[in-house]
Amino acid sequence: MADGYEKKRPYGKTAVLGVAAVALYSALLLNQEFINNYFGNGGIYAILPIITAFIFSFIHGTFTGNFWTMLGIEAKKKREGK
Image 1: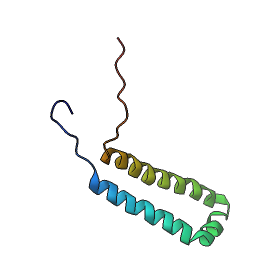
Image 2 (image 1 turned 180 degrees about the horizontal axis):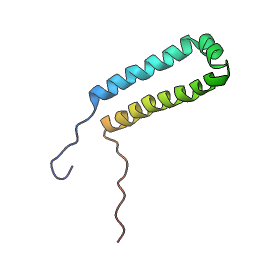
Image 3 (image 1 turned 90 degrees about the vertical axis):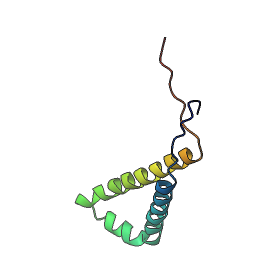
């Protein structure tokens, strides 16, 4: 950066979230039959796929954001209007 300040890169967070994402996907793929039977019971169980999707989305999205930050790729900042 121009002012000599460089933002810390989230190496540790990225590694932890990457391991968590791999663990979640592994658990999902290795237990497909159990998950399909359990989530397909209906009633109150119908909320479980939604909760699961939010968990996967949060972990994977945070990992991906940190990954791009770690590589030095950031979103373009909006300029204030004149």
